[in-house]
Length: 278
Image (cartoon, rainbow, N blue to C red; front, side, top):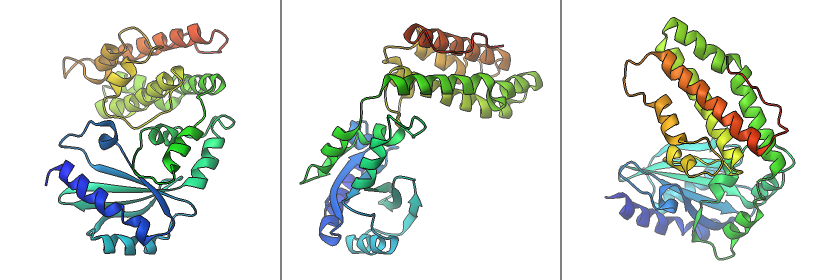
């Protein structure tokens, strides 16, 4: 079956969770089906909200069996604020992400006082589309997401920039990889540096992080970014010459980081940020 057909089948079955488990009070979908970007590589990401503790694994397993789901590809995975179960349905991966609404609310309350708190939950929650939500649980949770504060933005920007600048595991190792012409080592720490860059750009634009397709296009639409951010990222990720000197890519990376620092300082002149990237 094609993915849209499987999605309809899985959604219809999932709605019976409310009848099987009294704890379930809302079901939504995230990922490609929520954003309208489904393609041949998409899977189905379902969000199941409970009004108390997440049902025990054995209870969930029994419910899946009654719904007619086959063998799990993973089961009862702890994602800190949720539990995850995954299945294959007609060759398409279907993920159930279980969340306790009271726990999510408590997590959201901490966001603008604990700046170390991860940002993926609010970013993902904002994208959830309701499948069945008679009491408006999902809408209420979305409304509980605080505005991304200036204080949080400054903290996250400085932390991420400092991490790239001073960390032995990023620029330091990248430079070693260039000198040693060690492509594997270079790629490993290039990814870490790029991850920090994405975090900086999201914080600069006071946007909650989310796992996204098309991140280059997404950050290209942000207001506070270096000029030509898309092409600058592409020059680092996909150099035109597959055998291009690592030093050239490394220099592109340092230039981009310097540009990001300038954007950050224009936005927050008082931030104590590194001025040199040597």
